[in-house]
Length: 364
Image (cartoon, rainbow, N blue to C red; front, side):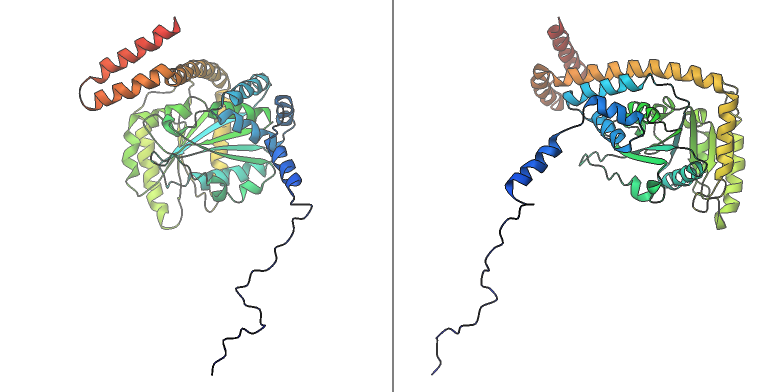
């Protein structure tokens, strides 16, 4: 006969007595940690930290600049106002090119070359934002794993959002903060070549276009927009079996540049080759940038004044757009008119006029 009597052995499924909260993880300590995290440094401390070259203060200030929170906007404006007047002798370099051309690898190679010479380098990398999920990977730091550990380098990836030209909405302000933090060279990496690439051209001193050889990219050289803006074309990945193709591409791009009128500053755009992966040709690229700075110093000064004017007009447009869409009356009418427009009951032009008239009426 089989006995149903339970034995005295402890089952593996038996619940054990839980542990007590320690002093480190008790409710009071948790509340203290949460309260500490909520506290934000004052505007004055952030400004001082930036001027002292504190990367943490710089990162926090850029976060405020990029925020859409109205309180953060007020704080960001105070920081920008304090930092913009600081005297600085910097060089702003925009770097663009099609996806896969090796922008991150090139920037890391150039950045390390500069930091080895005692320069302080800030990299503002704009990461593409998904139009579906509205998210960004922000993985530029992982692609620049050597430069990110350099004490003289600062890398800040930012989402492009809905900005045109692959430039984050607040990139201009971030440049001001990096310059106030005593960085000598500001490198701005764009998402890629687009129809509105003038955005990055309108905020830098030197505009560098990365190209590929042997990928059908040579034909892009005859397109006006991007080639007219560039100060130097650099053919990347000019190594190994691709060397011969790079030589041919250099000839093609050099010919293409002759079709464009001379620049107002007198600079003649160059076509160079490099291999960012093997650190070849980087010194020649930097020497070309220095030659540009030396021969166009007065033009750079004038260009920055016009850039400030453009910055003013662009900020006005952004603020007007934000005020328009934040208007509760506009939000209500926009939803109704959008439905009518989608169903072809009202034309988009009439609907837009009605919304603008409503907004102007509220402003009076």
